[in-house]
Length: 116
Image (cartoon, rainbow, N blue to C red):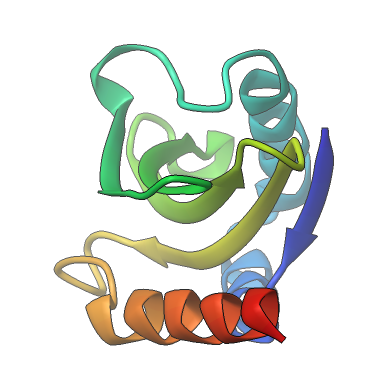
C-alpha cells in the first residue's frame, strides 16, 4: 500500500504532533491497520464519499497520549492504485466535524488531474 498526504494534512499533523507526543507512532500503527483493511473494520470507520475509483473515509485514530480519547482522520482510498492519501487530521474536542470544503476541494482537484 502506498501512502501520501496533502499539504493541509501535513500542517494538521505538525500542529497536533507538538501537542500529542505519541502521534507519529500512532499514525504508523494506523497505517498498518489500513494496509490490511483499507476501508476499515468496525464502527470506528465510516465511508463519507463512495465513487467508482475513490472512497473518502473518516476514522478514529487512537492516540496513546490522549488515553482513551481519539483523533479523527479523513483519508482517500484509491482502489485501483492501492493508494491511501491522508486529507485531514483533527481532535474532535477542537473541531466539531470534518471540513467538507476541504474534501470537496480534494475531490475536485483529483478529478481534474485524472482527466488531463
